[in-house]
Image (cartoon, rainbow, N blue to C red; front, side):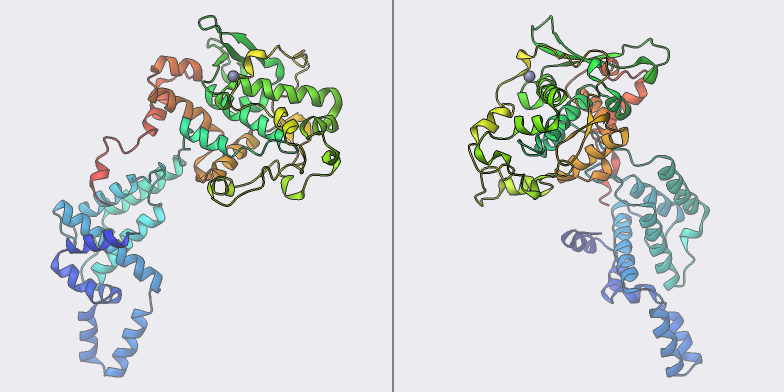
Length: 455
Ligand SMILES: [Zn+2]
């Protein structure tokens, strides 16, 4: 689809013949006027008009509009490349379709689906047919190019968009509100997103983590706390030759600190393990006479809290109630239960008695009422969680998966100047080519001639 301004510029660059035909409207591009004249010579006016009407009706207005825009794009490309649009050389058409297939949106997704590329090819064929010319798209080179595009797209599913640091912050901005009943999901999801990203973990690895697998240690070079995550070696590396312990340093800010997120989450797990979800609710609810009243229905959405409108609502000038999630009453006590966003809590972490070999899941399922389950979240749920936060941040969830966190780590670390070897070590990658692929994903249009085609 061309942008109206861009389309008018494109029209200026069109050859005169094409311009004249387009000025007559989309139908005139596709209906062979010479052939209709021949029909008129042999049949009477009524018969030929009847035929013309049905020929014009053979394509829907939408198809005609799409063909017109496809033909404009093709003609503009030819003008820019010094090629002839009509009649076209089959090789030019094939090169054009291949370049269009490689064009990416800013998100990294292909700009055109195989079906759209086939329609572009059909548009070129239709205009040739309307002019009584043999179609260049019937040639082997065009047919094989389209077949190759279809096969490539089938065998390489859309590469998932990596979560870069700024994207991670956008995802974290969509965390549910503090306070009951959304605080458990808030703390779990924050830890999951941070550990998944900083540890370059697979979704299955995240889902399988238990409290026994995670410890807080001291970074001997800085004296700061760091998170040590042990991964069961058999899952990722049956040979056991690679390091299966991932170290996550303290974050610069509490909001992006994996150690703080872990300490804050463990505090809730301990309350829950000792006295159950009623105690957890009590712990997270302001201590006031109104504390016992049930939470308002619209807040009981741990799975989809304050959805996509969150950021828009937060930015709007409309005054908002202090915290819609909490019943009226003293806020200070609930606020003090929620971790500070300015002060690190990780230094005070003293370990947990829950890491006692009983394999408490690190990431249990949580109901929308804030109750913690005893079973771990599934790998699939990890992927859905990442997609949900992507959607909430206004990003296309189709481009995100559980793997985005792992891919994002490699890309972000490369942008931050990490060496291939360092990235491979943290991500436990053994093949440098995998890492290179993620790094390239960071900017698919860099050094790519396709940006100069003006498609
Ligand atoms: Zn911290």
